[in-house]
Length: 87
Image (cartoon, rainbow, N blue to C red; front, side, top):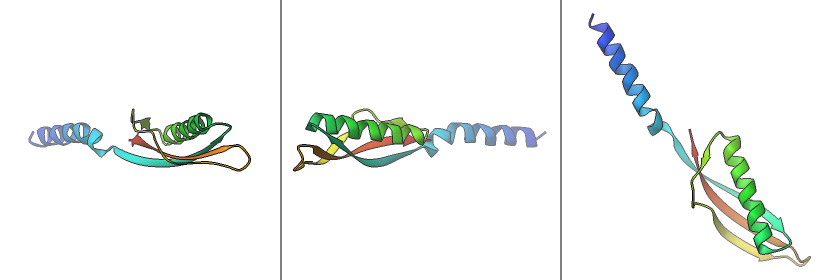
């Protein structure tokens, strides 16, 4: 009878610690657009898709533009990062 309480305690410990095994990953991606806002929107969309493809959830408020540059063809280029909570 001592085995059952030990197994139950071990199972409970694993279930409770599962959220602690989740990892926050920092993703980075780029975006091009006719305006800076368009490029930022494209980069954000790319980052959200990358996070969801890893079965993660986007950390709200973590989107940051790290570099932006207007190009000679009238387009804008943007580097951005975002945090993703990956299980």
